Length: 197
Ligand SMILES: Cc1cc2nc3c(=O)[nH]c(=O)nc-3n(C[C@H](O)[C@H](O)[C@H](O)COP(=O)(O)OP(=O)(O)OC[C@H]3O[C@@H](n4cnc5c(N)ncnc54)[C@H](O)[C@@H]3O)c2cc1C
Image 1 (spheres, rainbow, N blue to C red):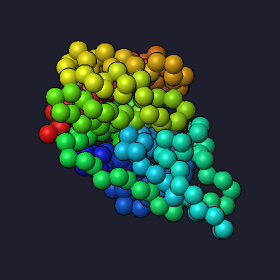
Image 2: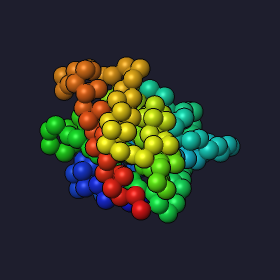
Image 3: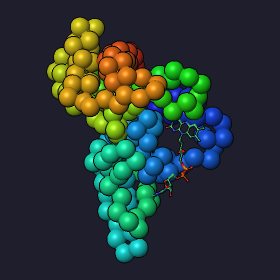
């Protein structure tokens, strides 16, 4: 998971990183958790196991609402499957925490793309903005087929919070979260581009 894991030092503290599991994080579905956005951008799949059943759900379809997932009663997340990155793929995870690690307020994003002169595809996952992590398909579509210039990136990043019902709480207003989301999406995309072979 390249830079997603490389940035793992910014998830919680050493105790959380050593004892917390990815399965526990996704099942909990905290709207500010890091893994849900990263796993959606990576197009991961979750194997959900019940006593007499097993099914596979795309990460994109798993997160339904705040602390709500596609898990049915009696099911557990048995496996998290992350596809191997193709050559020419760049990744970056951009995280912003206002307070110390563990503050639980972050505007976190990932940008992934592949280019051969032009961006063939882009995958962007967003967390910390609304009731659950999501794929920013508006950003992805705006970027695909472009050369990924600074102007292309800025234009695409503006799509990240379009139509999103952003959270507003004691840490940040909805308006401020959306403002940050655009900035951090643009930053994540620029860094991703710089990492693409
Ligand atoms: C101080 C602190 C700082 C943190 N900072 C961050 C951060 O910066 N970024 C971030 O993303 N997260 C952060 N976290 C959250 C942390 O990542 C999660 O608490 C951890 O990953 C949960 O994993 P766990 O195995 O301990 O799950 P648990 O806490 O044991 O379980 C969470 C919930 O999921 C259920 N569950 C657990 N495993 C499964 C499974 N396999 N299938 C179905 N249900 C399951 C449990 O029954 C429970 O309801 C922080 C947590 C703390 C305490």
